Image (cartoon, rainbow, N blue to C red):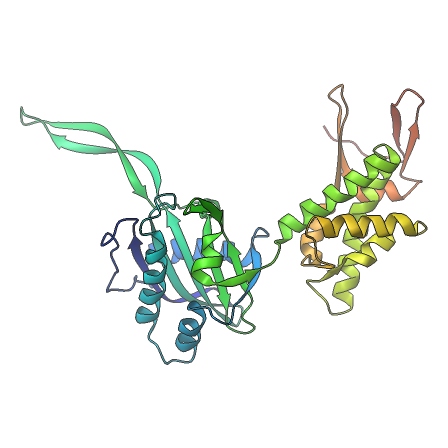
Length: 340
């Protein structure tokens, strides 16, 4: 079932009082331009691993607006305007938060209904302007446009995706200075929700923790690096098989990495906790396979190796030999075909 945009509207919010402009007309969701632009941005909210999961706080002012729209008690246009008025109040007087257009869209995808809120900070680009010269001819000049909307979805810094059932938000944001303090205003002040760790951040953090322990106890063991990645992929597969598609249990990962070393398992879990990792990580099987499948090595002489991490778990495929001078030899066995 294709993505279906039901409603969309674009408001302009600024830092100065009275500078915001609230549209009284929805976007034409039947136009090709609107469908392409809105669709590109909401798909990123659906699939990007950089999003943090979040839930509304009890006192959130956004939550009752979304629920009222969901129940048909508040029209889309009225709901979207009230959302953007809340955001505009936060921007007023806070010059560190860039002005922007705010896109609010209601859409269906794969049988589920969603609301998306995207703060589209302006980009700069150069274009041309054709003018009539004093002599009556035509001339072309280069001009700068400073209020271009970001077409590349990766350029959107603050946004959220709100599914109705269950209402577990996906939030993108970056901190900005509010009264001299750097805070994530989009989730804390606007949405008023509690955020967790994103898949991307969880993956990076757990690899950093494992790398620190590897350096401390094994002097950078290549086989252990690969074992960590394999453990994460295997645990994600196990979780999916047990009906926990997006939950990865950290304790079970530690058991796979250090099956016979209880003290190292405890140290690994403790170090992960100190870095803010929960005992249950939001890492599903497709993400784990994509992020941890390959092992990359780079030697000081410029040699780079990239191969599946699972090969390092098979002595019939790869063998490593450590030498007294700190170097090592990697042997790949039974290669049947090489392509340059």
